[in-house]
Length: 208
Image (cartoon, rainbow, N blue to C red; front, side):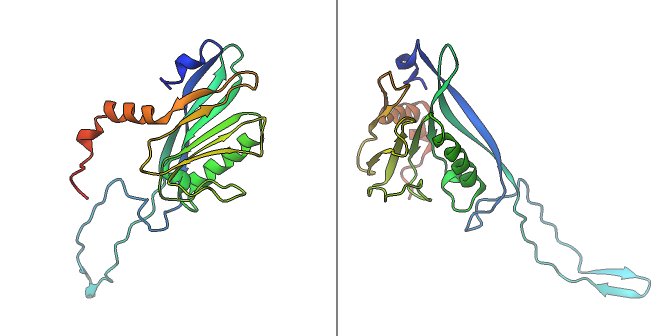
């Protein structure tokens, strides 16, 4: 957002927006859902009645899948005067790529709605695992991808691909057809976020 705004004004603005949904379906490995609090208590195996002592059946204590609220932020670029939506910039989350998850269905539904309009869509996939975004042809072999789908050139999409060993690229952010693209330097954004978040201290690089 900080990198793009000086390049967009005065004709355009960028706003940080978010969507909220509830993730209901468990992950394939069962690890995604978790209880807020777990209470475990030993129960007596017997109780007294007028007829004597009866033995209770001993249950297995399992965990119910609990719905979890998900919040995903994205950038929306608008014309400054008319507030016309021009471009959406998405950074994919793990939920967007988890097979059979509500987050993936939610995202693909929104994606389908956007690509049926003239709004430009930029999608950035910095995750090694999970299902990739669908395209008719196979994706080029790489670790990470950025998809630039221009509203006036669909069904074509520009795919930028790179490997873990390479710096993150600078990708074009399309605006209205009469205006030139603005560059988004992903490596610069990554380094700025890393430095500000002090991930050098938070992440334990000495461990596996």
